[in-house]
Every structure is written in C-alpha cells, then in structure tokens.
Image (cartoon, rainbow, N blue to C red):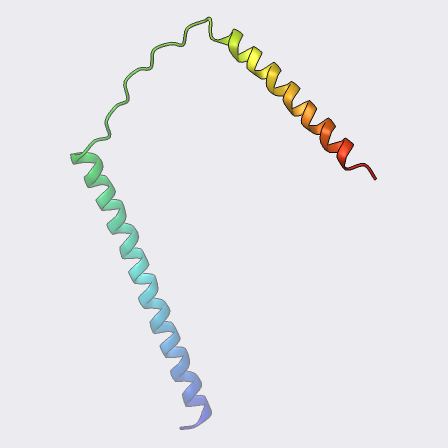
Length: 86
C-alpha cells in the first residue's frame, strides 16, 4: 500500500471511531436523563420534616466555648513561636 492510501484509511478509521463515541455519549446522556425523570416521577424524594427552632439560651455556652477556643489557640501559637525562635 502506498502512503496516501494509509493516511486516508487512518482518517477514515479516526472519524468512524470519533463518530461512534459521539453517538454513544449522546445516547448515554438521553438515557440518563430519561431514567432520572422516571425515578423522580415514580419514587419522589421524601420531604424532610420541619426542624424545631433552637432554644434562645444556646448562644451563651457557644460564646464561652468560642472564648476558650481562642485562648487555647493563642497559647499554642505562643508556645510554638517560643520553641522555634531563630
């Protein structure tokens, strides 16, 4: 076989392969969309129950925890800097 014939056959195979992949992926998108619609139609997602409002007394302990956490982080940074002085 001569070189132009091989190149032509290579392009033909490339286009056929790319066409097959394009058609397959297009069909896959449509099939996935159809399955999603079927599932949503016949098995609807359960609605979550309404959550009860949080009591108003909760922010005070959270503020105390936040202050304690800030103090612990500050102490850790101070100790790290003291141990890693140059």
